[in-house]
Amino acid sequence: MKTISKLYLGLVVGMFSVSTVYSQDEASLSPTYPPAKAVVNNPTAPASNTDMTITLKNSAEKPVAIFAGPKEEIRDPKLKTVGGLSKNTLYVQVNDVVCLMTDDKKPRACAVITPAVTTVEINTSATTIATK
Image (cartoon, rainbow, N blue to C red; front, side):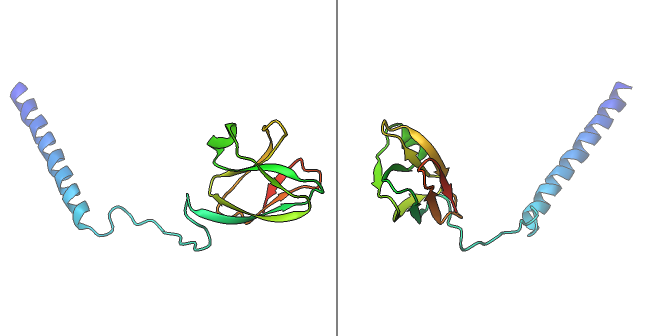
């Protein structure tokens, strides 16, 4: 009885290994394995970590301090002051942040830059920032 069960187990293992080897060979020869995924080609969206030029519109009448750059650098920010009722050009990368800063270098409001962003706008009271 042990001999028959060992033969049966050997036969099952042998069939499984042959089917596995055949599957791998078939996969390497087949041009459609793995199944092809649809590739969406969007020429207007830049790839990640690419430089972008966006417009910063300050609708407030007073100048405000902003930080524009990687989120990791917000602990020791390099501030830029933009004048009231002005349009400015910012050079940023995807996933950077643009933040309104207080006088003691703390963020008041932030906006994350995505590939679809073309404009960042500060409201008239200089308390919020929005992307468009």
